[in-house]
Length: 92
Image 1 (cartoon, helix red, strand yellow):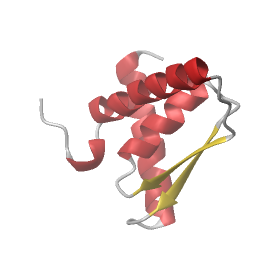
Image 2: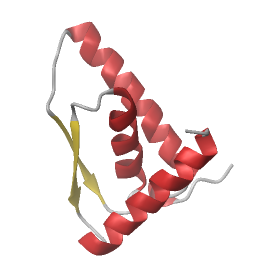
Image 3: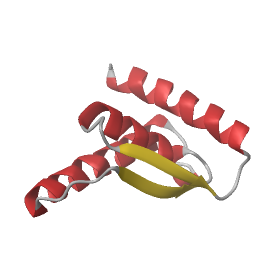
Image 4: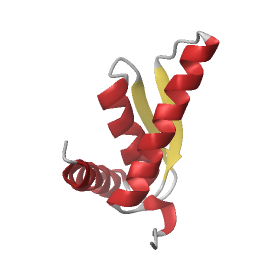
């Protein structure tokens, strides 16, 4: 499988969603509670996975992406499209 730079396809986004599962497990082990997960975002792939993972598994925690590349308008569209495609791939 080839995953583009930044995880910019549904398979790459799924990897970041899986990382959220691991983060949440670790938080629970350590008895930690968070309000936000902050990450840089350029391609939108990681941001889409983090946002989707948190919405599905820990909706009270907000995902905050700090743009470091593409314009805000382009990132919003890319992230929304990636989430839609990933949900279709995963059947959710």
